[in-house]
Image 1 (spheres, rainbow, N blue to C red):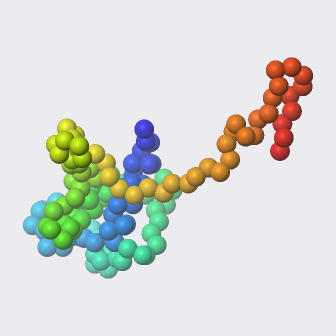
Image 2 (cartoon, rainbow, N blue to C red):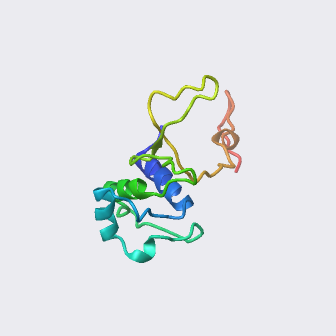
Image 3 (cartoon, helix red, strand yellow):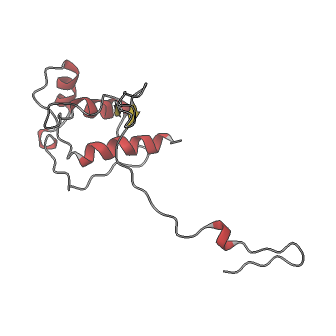
Length: 132
């Protein structure tokens, strides 16, 4: 289960990993309209550039969908994700595609080195004691 912030992080992470490469040769009128709102220096931003969005004022759904729609196809000419950041994945055992597209992308994961179980020490009798 993911909250909306995690879903947006996955989609923006996928776009950032690709280097924000925008397909400027598309004939799709929606993509052309979206390109008119972007400065030209954003068409080919390298993948190692740092990007950030303001808290509570980041990319809108329309902007994100437009960027996903305008992302360049891979070297085989196939767009890996649709306008919603989902891809049609194939079951490795059966070779059949899954019934519904699945969200794909990159997400920052942080391992929690301390667990609550290691912090709480209690006995069934006597006073409660916590070791810090």
